[in-house]
Length: 163
Ligand SMILES: Nc1ncnc2c1ncn2[C@@H]1O[C@H](COP(=O)(O)OP(=O)(O)O)[C@@H](O)[C@H]1O
Ligand SMILES: [Mg+2]
Image 1: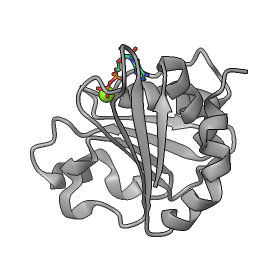
Image 2: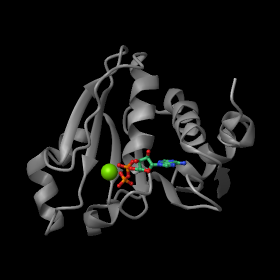
Image 3: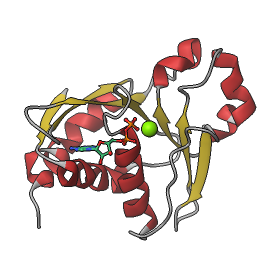
């Protein structure tokens, strides 16, 4: 587990950008946290970093439930917002099985129920100390236990410092 204090929105965006290059096809990032925690901000910054385009439009998938992005290496990123899901099976209609070949960024991952993949990186974002502050807790499951351990230095407090 890796716990990080995010002093402001910029710190959240830098953490997401630091994670971006380390994701590969087959990976899932579960974005946990309440409404307004910063899950979409995190996903947007991750996608912009990975796609190499800081201006690219990354709408919240609140209504579409899923948005797809192709990164320059041909990896497809699937950005899900499962808040409105009533039954885990509904995610199958969104292309859940196909998304296994890409990278899954999932808001409201608890909606997946039994479909939750064993291997995943969980990024939990919560309120922090003060206005605009957040606390991020990263935890690895399955193969992500070791991968998170390997990434501690890249994702640690140093990744949050403004350059
Ligand atoms: N440190 C921070 N990290 C992430 N979001 C922040 C932070 N500080 C303030 N915010 C604001 O909180 C809101 C988070 O919204 P959003 O990412 O859509 O939340 P969620 O997807 O978790 O519901 C945005 O308005 C953002 O500007
Ligand atoms: Mg959101």
